[in-house]
Image (tube, rainbow, N blue to C red; front, side, top):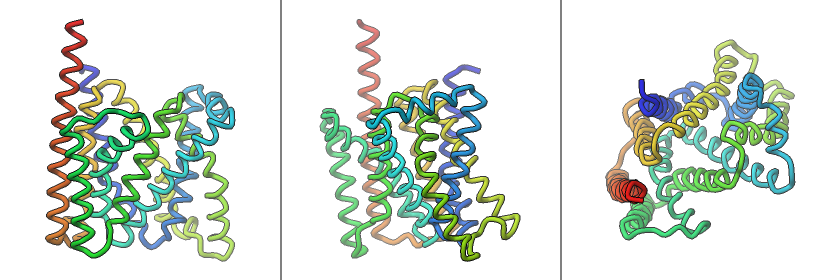
Length: 298
């Protein structure tokens, strides 16, 4: 099997796990989101530390946290990813999984906008139009429903800022995420101490919930490792295309399994977002092909 084919399979598997993860969090909807987040943080820390230990790279963790600048960057990344995780878990529990999927549809366009602001990356006319169309979709949904889609906006922005910070880190994704959850672990332990101190902690009450909470570490870590594996074997354009599988599955889970309401305004907003993504993706593919032709000619 070709390396590129292995990469595509890994990427599809990754996005499938991410897209269906809402089903897992629905099984825990009787547990407060902050408690689930605390367990996800701690069990992810255990999982990633074990992976680094098996790879003989645990010492790299100390290097990642060496220096004030690195700690600040990783600390900010930790804040953004924990915000993203918390809002996503909450969206599942309060019946807003559809809005969460909208956030991950918007994310690529938010990332483009952040890149233009932070790194002065030039946007083509098609990309600018796609970003403007996404903004119109948010405004339309806000006007139609009478309230901004805060969950979608927070998820897209927090993940966009997370990616922005990660771009400036010299360490790999597994090491950086391990450092992030390590920094968050004292807070997670404090949260769990609070819940268990008055006898309301979920862990240990029954085998089902305890095993599900422990599984959050594997659910978080395995897709990230597969994603890292995939990105080394396929083009960024392929990564971008396959990543749309994640919010698409989230959307299908929300409408078909959770049976959340899909209003006229949702239909209009999603249609505008899907059109914006089609324009953005087409423009990105053309740029990728043009860059490859230029390399071949040179």
